[in-house]
Image 1 (cartoon, one colour):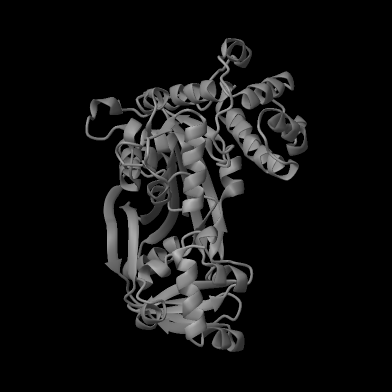
Image 2 (cartoon, helix red, strand yellow):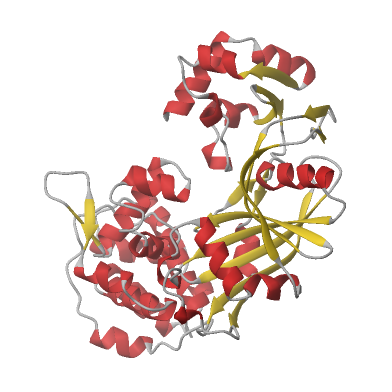
Length: 429
């Protein structure tokens, strides 16, 4: 249970919020009351629930969401279908990779290195530098005009379900980047690392705010950078909060092929198998995030699980999963008598690699050193890389052959392996 879980539990015990929500579908609460009832926890941090998984237990159990409505005031409302969050899993899984070749050689720039994009602003700035944003938007003229925090204008939000109209005024809004063309303004919410879903407030509030401030069309976009991949998703809002649809999606590599040729049979034959390490078997589903940890290890000081959790904006449990995955693959090693980690020689090789293709190949070689993965990837290759032939039930006994896990746990870990094989299918040919 997290500190936010405990704090919100106290708030709902000490304030009459649930009776109001049961009666009318929503309840207003002040920041002062939140702080007092939670024993001085910061209200802004308690209200920061940017993903479904980051919601406190009381919100999950009762299908609740929270929105700021004024400086120092919030509304908590019933959100049965959880329209506050938009799932990205299917979109990100299905969007095809495209190779983008900029007209200008970006390698002449020394202060913005594509190998070391360690913040959302750096990733967007690089995409703008190589004209990737112009390519996606089909704009000939596009200038950065908005960035950072500001107070909103007054605008109206219709809460889903009971259609209660909320007047939002003077709340703090943060825009990762806003670009203006002669006819449109493009508002970006950016993330490092793929996310399963996001709180639509992050796009909706800037969209509503700038719709009040400008006569130009406001275009909301979600931007993701992970291990050399640039995802750009364009959205359109409906009249009611929660009405959102993706109207355009692209994923780009820059100056390298979307997929790299890999002679998997040769790699299997040449692999040097080592004993399975005495480390928790991998539970981190996104291998690109594992590489992101390595490439940003020094610049973002990703030496422990709280730092990793903060960097990717997820809870410490997931931070632990990804730390252990890097440890299991031999990219990280524990500093003796410490909770801190450092890069291994193999991790340093990946961190210093010039492109995605090289990083992915080095990571694959590390995977093949582990007996369970070597056998599973060999089976995968023998099935012509057909994922439909490899179910969790088929893979679980192979895992148990090399690692002491019960049947249920082995099948759960097999789902992680299947995600890693999907990563191979998406990035290699």
